[in-house]
Length: 303
Image (tube, rainbow, N blue to C red; front, side, top):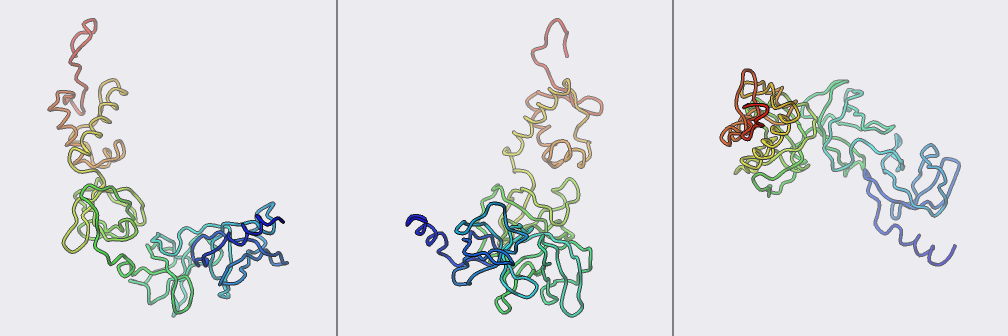
């Protein structure tokens, strides 16, 4: 092995690996249980033989996920869990142990513990829960928590009205759905803004409607104002053109059918129809709308 290769190996890992995250570690030796990786200050870390990729050699670097096995020993895997430390995720309860807590399927051989003290309500086998995954400082173990508020950012939100954001639906309330915004803040999607029910744990794109004084966010699934009307109006025209100039949709169509066809709320759809009517690009017909041809072909007669 040349000097440049040796220098590369020495520099391949300068920071201490993060437990509960993906890391790139160098293979330092092989043993019957598997490969041992350079964990820096954490020492050598085992990658069990069943996870060893083909054609791997000593000195190669591997991207692995680092966690604790059933005996609380550091171990590496090339598998990727459904979520990692620092993430909010919707996970299924696969077991409950009285006095200890519940266990969640997060995609690895060892299930993830949701301690009793970290449950905002008692869970049962088969439930789906939205949980935060973190590294417990006392035990050094990776655990989950459904007490979501304590794991959100304490910093005031600095979003602009109309800004697109990523949402995770966390729970339903009488007013609407609470969503975790950008893995950091609470927001609310009002029932009145929605075409139909949402699913717990659903991840979707939304928009900031307003930033409230208490630091919480009012949300929508469509852009506000002209920013949502113009693109939607264009999609309606395209759909009319593809369907021979007519559609079985109007301002009496159900919110569910509008959401399924156009991916938007009924409120936004009606606003787009209003804009197209004012521009004389469509007209209402029985049980639908029709494209207006302002320059008809004389051979076909007037529309």
